[in-house]
Image (cartoon, rainbow, N blue to C red; front, side):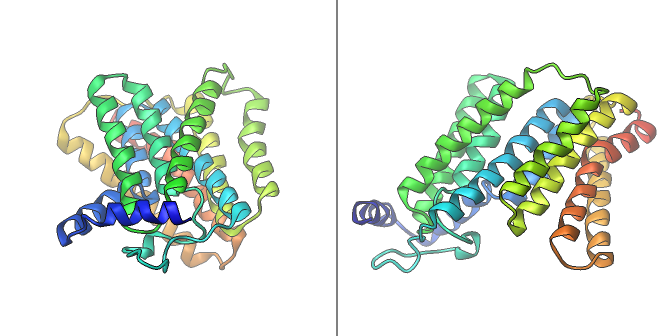
Length: 282
């Protein structure tokens, strides 16, 4: 760990109050909260197939990251002599691999594949590097954590894009069974509390996508800024209403958590698109 600690200390040698604020901002670009705001933008307003790829890749990435953290159980550099750790509220659990680095590589890997433009490659690569660097600057991850996170994220992108090439009809019973069965198997293999909610959302996202493809036929189209804001606000309000409403109604526990995320995921991929098509025509 000494070499890795020296690397962190070297990065932190340029620290300043301005850079502290900058890297706290940057690290939030790799947070789950940011991605859960970004996914509906793609699914509802740009390209629903890219949206479902991003959500699938991200949720699988979160699952794999949680599993690796539990298996390796490596402590973070927080409290290590000579290392200054900031914004530790963004650093829960074990250290290896970095969820922020892995998530940014996963999400931006899908986005870069979608557009395949030099400007998007530059933007995506810059965000992946900056988010990863922010975890070192803030003193909440070891260098090997962010390197492993980036590698795992890109591998997940390759798997999701490869699976996306499979031609599975949305009305096939086997397709619906896989949408329920795969997350259930993953949950059975690693039944930790956070996994319940993410596998619930993964299953709902896949089921909602299949239901929408077969019965709704929603296709995002370009619209004026006001209409886009109204659509997103309506969809987000519905998401929060379902999530917060179920949180009040259902008891605490893993099953209730899975249910909240399941119905929220159904709203994201089927409920909101149905509403948009019916009342906005797109």
